[in-house]
Image 1: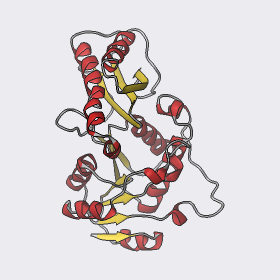
Image 2: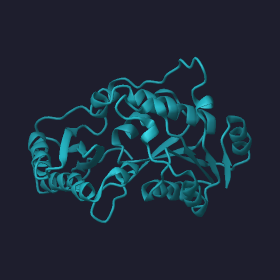
Image 3: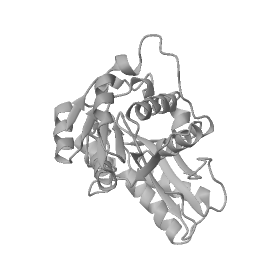
Image 4: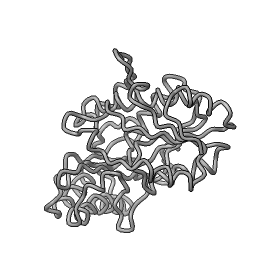
Length: 285
């Protein structure tokens, strides 16, 4: 496994890796969710690369990137065990040189959901991902469904800017009690960690109602909200039933929807989602 930090090193190593080349962009502090993406890439590609970079431009004023958990040596050990060929851990100087002033922005899709509560977040995400794609030239790029809006936004960016690659979105990986795996879970104390399962319970309740025949968007929202209210430590920021492709909030009867939410447990902000759909009305892979 080659570990590089500079753009020049990356170009040299990438040039000799066989295609198809699969890329898994991460911010590090890896867990089984990240590793599931690596395994999918390993199964589908001749070579696999992982980027580790805590991107400062996607953090808001109240969400300091310096507080993001890090364990680079552990990350490398995990990736080597998975047979990764290349790890690129770029520095800020390569990513955002002095007088940096070029940004990539997807417009309509970033105005809903996370975009309402984290202004500027997606501009940081799309800019850094575009830079990672340009530098590594992947044939496939792998992202998790847990960050559902991010996956939709990146797919749109790839389509609009004619990136010659396929975005592969993989299922959310969960703990045994349903909590979606996230690097931010490390900030939860034991009581908060137990309380955090309320997100999964709320989503599951709405999904079960949908599967039992409930199709009204407002009813599905209310089901999720009512479950969240049962947990005193949970402070919902939003609860959504949206179109999986446009992310527009839905009303009335729905046949396919992205159920999602952002919830504070203590000072930790958690997100999660599930997709519900009638048979034969699936969303794009």
